[in-house]
Length: 150
Image (cartoon, rainbow, N blue to C red; front, side, top):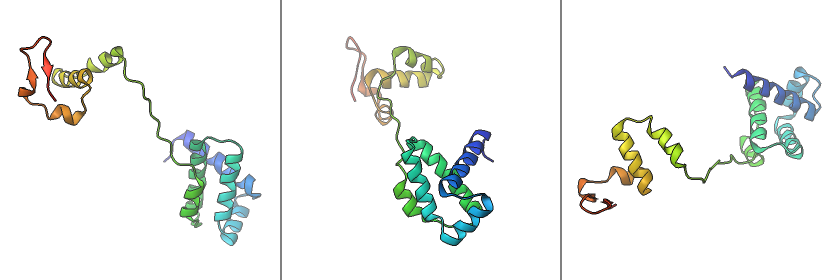
């Protein structure tokens, strides 16, 4: 079961798909899609979404709704051809490092042993595997300040 928000988005996508392709209603759409195939209609729909300036994620969501409709009614389409037309999924990265207050907030939620490991990783810029491979001999407590050899 889809969330109400997703369900309404899919309904809107199917309605727009019908409008773009000139289908009068669901029965007319099913008849035409079975008769002529869904590939041209899908590509026309994706092209229209691009022309309207929809964001890549919006296009993917609209197409997901139409694909669900087509699959529900056993109408085949070329997944390879469609994939070429769709925008690639965007990887969202935030390159800003955490502030000290953000780190403290998270650290206060951890157990003491995990908190120490996380402080060492954050303070020394260690990756998880580097922190896990540390040995007691890598820590020099006799120097001032103490040193950690990685």
